[in-house]
Amino acid sequence: MNHRIGRGAMYLLYVMGAILLGSTISRLLLGVPFNWALEMSQFILSAYYLLGGAYTMQLGGHVRMDLFYSRLAARKRAVTDAITVLFVIFYLAVLLGGGVSSTNYAIVYGQQNYSAWAPVLWPIKVIMTFGVFMLLLQCISSFFKDVAAARGRPIA
Image 1 (cartoon, one colour):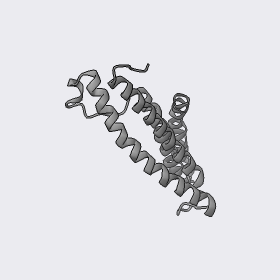
Image 2 (cartoon, rainbow, N blue to C red):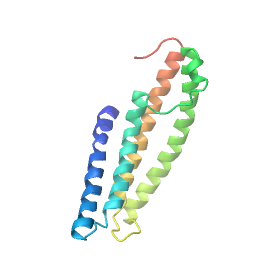
Image 3 (cartoon, rainbow, N blue to C red):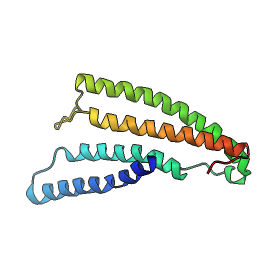
Image 4 (cartoon, rainbow, N blue to C red):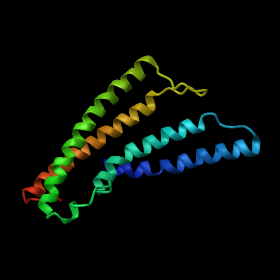
């Protein structure tokens, strides 16, 4: 599921680029700016990196401090990864709790952004919370794979 969502999220950059290009052309040629373009671009970028985070983790594409890590044996790397991902899981669990609370608030009270466009915030908050949830699931999967590799029985 993370693979499909991540691959789909890749195309959000094209949508964001089209919005920004359209806004620029409208402002320069017609003298009519889109007051919603910047905020929509921020929303799309947030969706892009939060929906793509789990896919990136699935591919092993997140940045690591490789000062000592590359010198470790495969089992020790797996132990290091398992310990590290536990901290990430804790962080994401707290972030998910805050995301659910914030999303619930936005839905119940019809929260809007403080801008001239004043969009409702619940759609992007739902997407962001879903992205954090998917990353949490991917981290749990990575944890079990790391534990299996540390025990000498790697999971493909």
